[in-house]
Length: 293
Image (cartoon, rainbow, N blue to C red; front, side, top):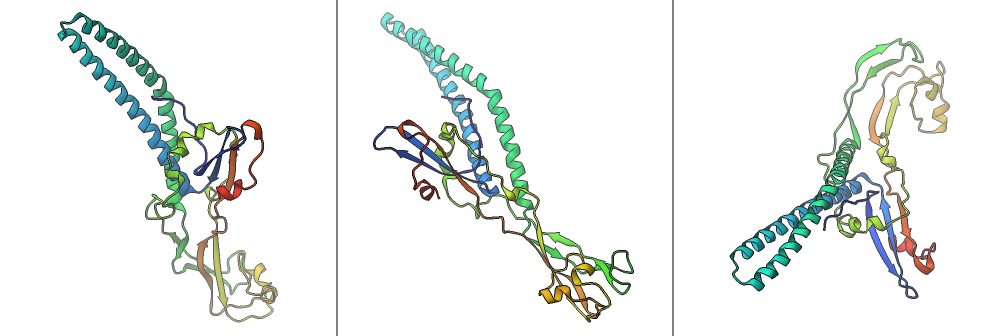
């Protein structure tokens, strides 16, 4: 039977049911992982689930209509009064079922269609995020060299433009990053509405990416300019001594070696959610975290 109610939350990667021995109550625990790839897989599963409900509801209506047609033919062709009477009863039941199914479909079509549209928009946004997660920027040779510009430490210093180009991910399926898990489990969808307490976790990877620029310099050093950090914004000295050293005329090289994305925030963020019920309401098994990890 088609039901127009659905709930949406963070990516589900594990669902665990516990049956208390001293009380017939169940506790449903959910571990939510907020990675773009897990979310994409979950959205695909949820969209497929809702579209499947639509299709199943339509198929049920078609089956009922076919049964009604066959019963109508049987009633017209039968010459036995008892048979006709029995067929009439079946026709009435089939007609009532058809009307009920049609009402359910009409009542759920608009809200579920809107929900599907929102989910597909979110899926598109997540795919864009995954495609834009550049791990490395390819640097070109310097161009447009200039000297004696405002902000430079001395007239002999130079500046130039370095173009950075990022190569995006070849695909957004995440089949390599997320090969298996409860995001492919039907219970991740059907049991979700039973959860009452849901805590949302910010995903730092949905923020603009930051890149670590590796900068190197080589050349003569004297006491005619300020320290490295003062003379060149963004310079990272190798040692504290180098940081405080003065920078003179750089006769060899000064530039960016590499630009790589900061992956320090890529660790999965997890939380355990549960709906307490029965005698042990509000209590959680001390081993729940281990079981949900």
